Image (cartoon, rainbow, N blue to C red; front, side, top):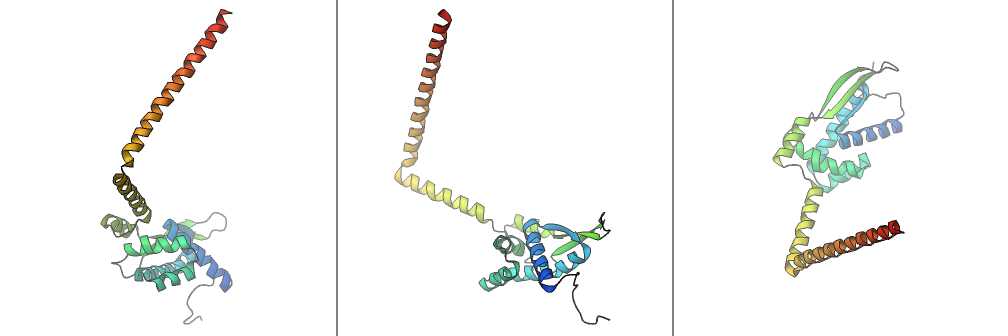
Length: 189
């Protein structure tokens, strides 16, 4: 009997199993849900709960520990900016597993593991999730507008655009006239 032996080996060596779970966890963090076999999903659930709990600490040491396991910068950023703040009020159980039935090829039991969407949506509505891309874009626009107003280049840029439009329309009108003149001379001959 396997008394006090935790975890499934899943028919893999330790290194292979660890690499598989790293990749699966990074995919789960990036996409929010993944489809896999039921035993893998059950094992992944405990790792996902541990990494989200680590993400809730939000310290440099916690980020380094998360990166040490995940080895994926995008996944670590998403974990600390989006997922962990969404579960700040929850003490555990961040994932759910749906059983999907048997796979056609080998009749393995399939499952879908996902983060609890209700908490993620509530955190977005409450504003707990940080959207760095939107912040950067807003900051850049505000900075350029301040510089333009201070130097007065906004009016100059607008005037320059209008002048180029007028010049372009004049050139296109001249080209059309030249084409019509050439075609009329060809028809007379």
